[in-house]
Image (cartoon, rainbow, N blue to C red; front, side, top):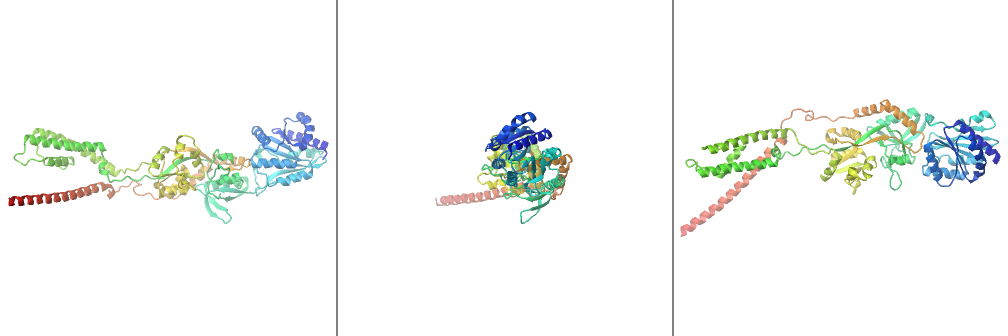
Length: 619
């Protein structure tokens, strides 16, 4: 190739692009094969161009990383003047280490037509979407065939022939930027020309509901808020889609071994163009994928079974605490003892049979339960004691009956789980704590280094992870009803599942925590992330997403409300009165035991009397 001619052509190309793309900073990357050309160009370009930076290529990622840092500050148009081997190595580094930025526009210049086609066919199908490249293939005599990277309907990056640029024809010379196909970001992807995109998805109502899964793994789904959103995006940007599910059926996260699980893994490996189904925007996920703007929000709540009614077996004792019952017992014993001693000392019952101590105890107890007594008070000292004792009994009986009525008619329930601080108590009571695995819900506890989140991470069952970490949220919600299980999940989604299973069967914590945003994950650097975000913002502003969400909730079947839940009157049942029956049974059992003891004692006493009389007769 003619060094002088190619140097002049490169100089003219750079001047033309500098004039038409003043907003971009021109930079050159070269290797040893083009070192002489750079030496010839540098004195002229430093004067003729508005901005210029020149880098020497090396076989490591250091130079690319430096350019990416520069592109974060300003837009760059990067000319690559390197051998075919260096170009292949350069883009291999970019793809392997995901060192890409849509703020860099690549211009590859070949020295000959042959090397140009080698580059074209060597890069086709190997460049990830979002790497925007123009190839200038030197035809000689100041002519270059221009190719521009383009993603076809199958999602494969190819080079399309755009035309021939001739620097000797002024009209053609000015058309170089148009031939190269470079446009500003806001012009990109307004029409994806019917491209078919693979979309990773999981089933979770109200976001996605599957109709059918075909043999090739294609999922048919036509309902759910995220499906409606996907249809709106496909209509606005003119693309079609195929739904597929990840093999591990998880949302996904980067793993310690470098792999990425779930839907996030499919997007990171470019097995899917993007993913939908309430995917949380998490910093760790953003290390392997990009996210659109958020389109929905949620917060975590604790789902447990509805608290059961406490047993009414001891309801008869519940109106008063233990201290009061001890006080009443002491009062009965003390009052009866005082009356017995008083009667003994004054000997008031010489005509009528004097009551013994046991009879005083029994009659004082009869007064306590408002049943009257057999005590005849002949002295004012006794009358004063009994007067105040009757007042004492009246007050206690009124308070007891009122409290007992309240206890029976207003049921008492188990202590519910309403906050994170209640989870330790629940685990001690035999409950298992659970979340959906490979979701943000797991990682907020797993990655916590201090505070209550770290404490809660220690409450999960790490010995048998299958008991705490479920694959699907509906499974966790069903376990809440089937076993002693407490499930942490997003409030809006959990409430929807609870409506399907029977809302009255669940208790949902009053406290909410960890507000979260949901977005669409896309491969790093792809250009359709920006139009996705733009359209999502329009849908949010128009209220479409809120309407779709409200419509989805209205479609859920509501469980029938029982008469008790509607607040209608219901008669007392055996459950309400079981304490009275238990007391009667205990009294009857105690009386039977006492009767047996009395009979046995009487038999023993009678034997002793018979023996005594026999001995007396003999004597």
